[in-house]
Length: 174
Image 1 (cartoon, rainbow, N blue to C red):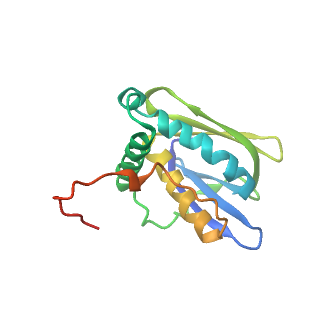
Image 2: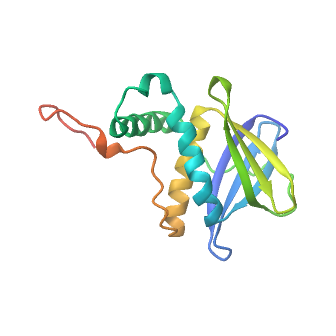
Image 3: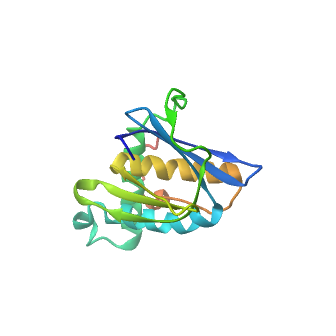
């Protein structure tokens, strides 16, 4: 990509049965990607592997259920720092004549909490996107919400929020 990532939005295109992911940069450039159900199903475990490795040193002695609970809490903390209320800014120059069909890709945990996401397209192009921790979690939330709207029944979740135990003498807020 040409500039720093500025905004990611996602919607479901029922007529194509695909997700449209729009990624814009701070220099007002924008890419459009089409994600298939099959690709999302393969992408998700790779994203979860990166999330589970966050703060691995503090989680290594935890039982699997506790690790999932910690991952769920970290996800919630990260998405609370994101703003999902803004509409997609329409003043960016689209660098793709038509949305690029993503046929493959890879996820690379990077140094200092930056994750590299590489999309490989049907036209054999490779587009690299760098996601900090909050953007990675925001992308996961967008994938969860949009696949639910699409009715894809992928059951995407980050961690296991149900595993978080609250002492009985403490009040619960929802």
